[in-house]
Length: 295
Ligand code: GRG
Image 1 (cartoon, rainbow, N blue to C red):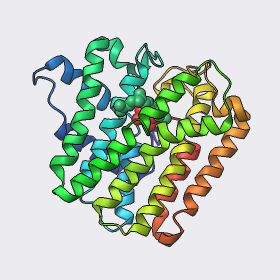
Image 2: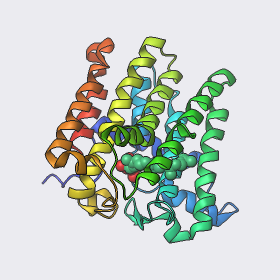
Image 3: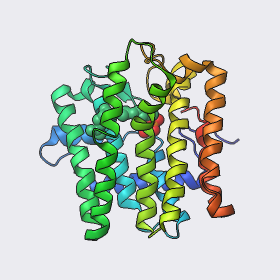
């Protein structure tokens, strides 16, 4: 009998990339017995917990589409470290105050807020160290610029700041979209662009994968809002109904409207891949996974 799919089941080629990313993270993260042990354990607790690794897979697939993905591992691991760092910060009591993440106690619940903060900064710093060390200077400088722009006050940090300001308030659809383009879309876009840069992609191909990823990231967030209402915590790895104080794509458009919006964003994402023709089938499969995901 075929076993039931795992909660994080992905198409086979995505699962292969996931396993590669896990291997790279294991190589780059300090061991749990390396001092300071508590900080390293906290970094590993969140970064190595079971997760979809969608941003890292996106970096690999964008690189593959642009000709070669044998140099994308550093970017894939770096983007996952940045993402894990953002999850630790996002879960803190002074932010979203979420006790569970990736099916485990959130980092601050397991290790305390002080260690969680140090772990988040440890992961963030390690991500840039990995980019600087794994690539030759010109490419490393481009990648560090790309990811620092994505994380900074006009990227993830800016999106988070506005998201916190918007809590408990009615906001316009435009503001909601801007918050999530910054919080989620920008890192997806940097992942794809970074992967493509390691493959030596042309400016036209860089623009195409960035446009794909930007729309995929927003679709991913719309489904995240749906899963907050409809998702099974055993599959999502976090508590349900955590976003009730926020305006979300579901509070704006309803369940059916949000699902339709996610589908439209995935279609827009796929259209950006037109210059690649049928070679982009794996990224198209990734958008189908995102539109229908339950974890
Ligand atoms: C300095 C890195 C840094 C961040 C500061 C806290 C913050 C600013 C931003 C928060 C960004 C954030 C957590 C956005 C949520 C995006 C999102 C949809 C998270 C869920 O991602 P999944 O489903 O999770 O890919 P897994 O666990 O599978 O990786």
